[in-house]
Image (cartoon, rainbow, N blue to C red):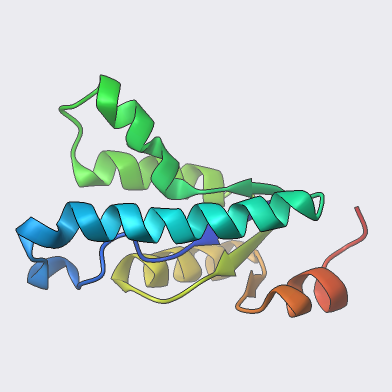
Length: 120
């Protein structure tokens, strides 16, 4: 089962971001997403963390925000479930897309893994 990890990468709405804090927020939020993904992987599932495409950005430093978002949305479309850590304007777009595609969205690991998830 492939699980898309949805969580805020920037702590502010797109229009209200503080440029001096964006990088610090991104790293802190990505840390949380990776911790959750590690826990999900230990349970035998396959997590996708959309913020990990930052490694591609180190090679392709001229990408725009929408380039990164496009990668994440492409992975979301092939996932079996979305796990939401916390909300943001970007997370809401991910939730909306998952619902359009009929992909279940979960906000609680117990619900996802023990009550609703198909057998793996």
